Figure (cartoon, rainbow, N blue to C red):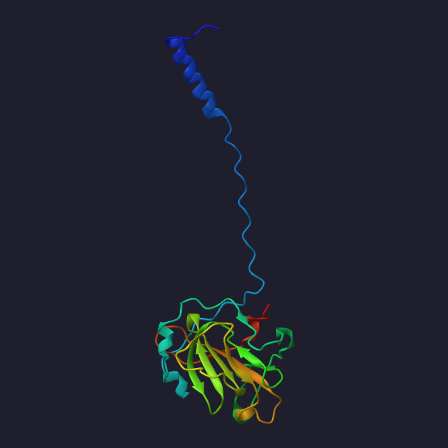
Amino acid sequence: MGTYRGPTALLTGATLLFLWGCAPAAAQPPEPPPHPPTEAQGPAWPTPQCEPGADADQRSSWRPRQLDQVGPVPPVSLLMPVDGALVADVYPSFGAPRSGGRSHEGVDIMAPRGTPVRAAAPGYVVRVDPDAISVTTVGDGGIRYFYTHFDSLPAGLAEGQYVDVDSVIGYVGNTGNAAATAPHLHFGVYYGGLGEWCGWLPLDPLPWLVDRQ
């Protein structure tokens, strides 16, 4: 075959470039479908709509300093705090009427006396009440967790201490105003955000609870 030179070579090169530009583009692979949400993911946390000291409860003026140590994003779910208990066995009692015109600000998780209770989410201990035998922690997103009616507390548990989901924070009992009931953990979840303190907004913990694996 002869070698093309001069104008013929230029024409041939231009023709090839033209044909290349007219060729159909290679088909692009389809975009992968979005990942489905994790089955254990709870509902979205609400945005607090309140002002500092908006309610008459003394808790509204108390801002734990540990709020400055936690992360900004609330957890997508909460682990069952009571060893051996299942979410399916928890009665949905949030909001049920209580004596004195109160409503139930949490759920009761029944278990034998002395059953270990672990933190449902990582955070810091902000209050230990030896009289009511209760523990309050605060975690990411400013979520507050209230555990009460303990039979006893683990030795050394102190305010300011960091706890993770494996940390034992108490043992099931029926102390305080639960003396006439069977042993159980009262578990409350409250939301107030990370900014200026704006009270305790009770939330039903049940939609966020998942069983421990």
